[in-house]
Image 1 (cartoon, helix red, strand yellow):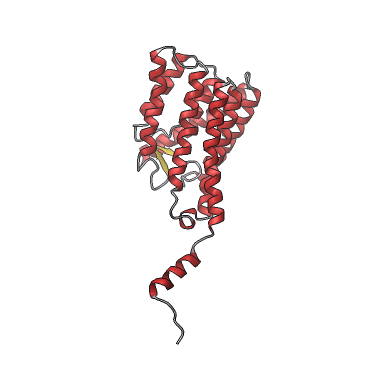
Image 2 (cartoon, rainbow, N blue to C red):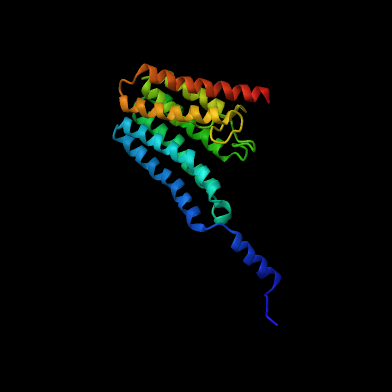
Length: 246
């Protein structure tokens, strides 16, 4: 009689056979991890006063962040690499690229107040986002961000583009840091089901406007800046409306 093996061994064999290939999943994790390298380059650009270069790197990091989740779901990375926490990797990279590096740019670029007030303002995003990225419910089950989703890179972008002074910049930073703790449900453009096509189209136009504006610095087209800010206004209004309606 042929030995078919124990039921446990047979179940393990079936599980291994059904598991998606590891190669593409590992490639997706590496793709996400490149954000940490971009964060390092952002800091280097900030130290060298290469503001435009830092903003270009912000854009590349956002594109990677906006596409790696789709790739992770497509190649079923959780099943292919069950011992690796891709969500934790994503949070680490996002903290560096969306929070830490933008704050460094604002500090070294002279956009924050001098002396101890500048230190306090610089620390607020770092502390608030440390809390935000550690929350178990930072991303809701129906795919919203709970509280201001640490878009400090976007804030830094507009500080540079609009040539805001230290006082205006500080007001924006303090306000957004407070909003981290306010339970508004912000749209997750690539995953929120409501108005998904509209949100994706708007986010794509916003990214294209970002690129065009950076290419035109230090004097970008007012029309492009208005289009960019229009999307921000729409995104904010939509998020508040959906929160109140719910």
